[in-house]
Each structure stands twice: as structure tokens, then as C-alpha cells.
Length: 252
Image (tube, rainbow, N blue to C red; front, side):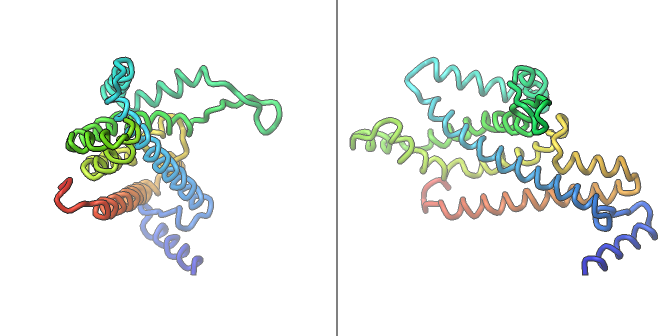
């Protein structure tokens, strides 16, 4: 079955040289795109997770009675919203990466950075998307009626308990549509990790069509379809989550 599948695309490449789906009939190229897709998925999941955590914590700090905490969050937001994500990526990897401690490699004599290029990509992109998530969660928090927080306080809830048990669950329902848009943009932005040689899907596709010019069009099509499917899964999951959390008459 698999051999017949590979043979079909091998014949397509012979009859139509400009449409060489080499990753469907060459085992080495097949595993290149599989590896690249795996890196893209790992990057996407890690960045989505950490950016949401940053957004939740940052929104809570914005309401802190401590002026320095509020100013710290505001400075962070302005820095990451007002600079391009690709520039941030290069800054984290090439500038901050110079100060990263090193550890002994598997061979026992080479020194490798404690944080790899994949790690810097996750850190940089998470902070970038987290800055927008802070504002998204802040808007959701402001939509929660003040009487609700006052009621929680009167019941003896601390500020952290009120935020965690009352405000955050309600604000989530309000900010999910905006959060969905930001996370979709984040998944698409992971392609910029190619700038620091993270072997994600775009990096591997570039390598394939540089090695095999006849595979240019098929690889581009494959890249587009892969991201359509990946983002489609995220959007579907977010819409299902939004529908499941919806309270009639609250948060649209």
C-alpha cells in the first residue's frame, strides 16, 4: 500500500517535473518533513501554554496595589508590543544567548549552551504573545462586575483567592474570542524561528526545495496545507472550549 503510494508520486514527478512531491517517495525527505512538523507542534503547544500563563499572571499584577509591579508589567507590555517579534527572537538568541551558561556535551569535551535555539524560540515567542494576552485578560477582568469582587471580599476571600476562584473564570468567558485570535497568530509566528535555525517545518521545507528545485511548488503547497490544518485544529478546539464555558446571558 505504502509502496504503491510512493510509486504514484514517483510517476507524477517523472511526468510533471515541476511537481515533484519528493517527500512522498523519498524516505529521507519524508522524515525531514515529519521532524519539522513535530518541532512546529512542540513550539506551538509550548508557546501557547506559556503565553497564557504569562497573560494570567501579568493581568493579576496589573491590579496589584504595588506601583512597581504595575510599572514592571506595563514596561514589559510596551517593550514586546512595540518591537517586531523577529527582532526579539534575534535579540534573545544572539544577545542574551551569549550570557547563557554552558554544559558539557554528550561527547564529554564540547560545551553546549544550557538553552538551545529551540528554548530561546519558546521563550521569545511566549513573551511576545504573553504581552498581548496580558491586555486581553485585563479587558476580561474589567468586564467582571465590581459587585462580584466585592461579594467575594465580603466572604473573606483574599485578593489572590478572588482572582483565582471568581474573577479569572468569569473573565475567561469574555476574553476567549480575542485570546483565540492571538493564539492563532502565535502559531503562525512560530515560522519565524527559522531565523535562528530551529528545524521546524518551514526550515525543513526550505532545505528540501533548496536541495531539489523541482520540489519547490509541492513543498510550498504542503507547507500551506499543514498550517491550515494545524491552525484549524486550534480554532476548532478553542471554539469548542468557548461554547462549553459559555454562561447564558454572560460574556456574549
